[in-house]
Image (cartoon, rainbow, N blue to C red; front, side, top):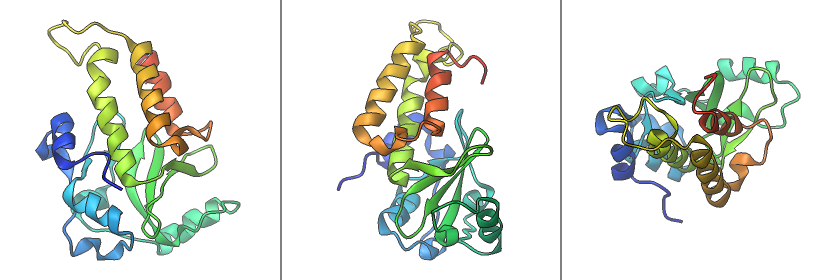
Amino acid sequence: MSPLIDRAGMESAFGAEELVTVDGEALAVIAHEPTRTYLRDVGLPAREQWFEADEHLLEGDLEVGGEAWQAVQERYSDCPFDMSSWLMLGGIAMDDVVVDTVTGVVYCLPEERPIHVLNSSVDALGFFLHAVEQERPVFDGDADPSGETELDPPGAEDRLRALMQRTDPVSLENPDSSWHMVLHHIGNGLMFY
């Protein structure tokens, strides 16, 4: 399966200096080859409107499983997912975003809601962050200082929702998915964010 987004695509939205990649040696803790490749060759934004990379990812000091995840497993004792192979990627708003280093599935750990699948892969996560950034001038009045772009927050929300459903349907299956919150704020022109 070909990647949804490549380095050039991510750079077009975030700039090369804002993308976090991890060197090959540090990636040895990740068993899932497509995840390793994505984090080495493409990268995630260090910080943008919706996503903020984890400090350990920024420093290339990857920690998989361990005591920290045992504490999280205790906090979410009814969670059906095995957290022993999870790696913190960062967060969307107040929700932590992790990747299972064996399967490549991206999960969301919300503060007040159950843990759920956020994306089928880190590639899909990056693709969605890119797509949101590409739509920014249409939903964020501050994104186009010239004021030449016609604002259409509901249209941006509709286009992004359709793209997400078509590209990675699992991303919107859970009604508590962080993507629903992101889309809601986009549709409202970022009001209340």
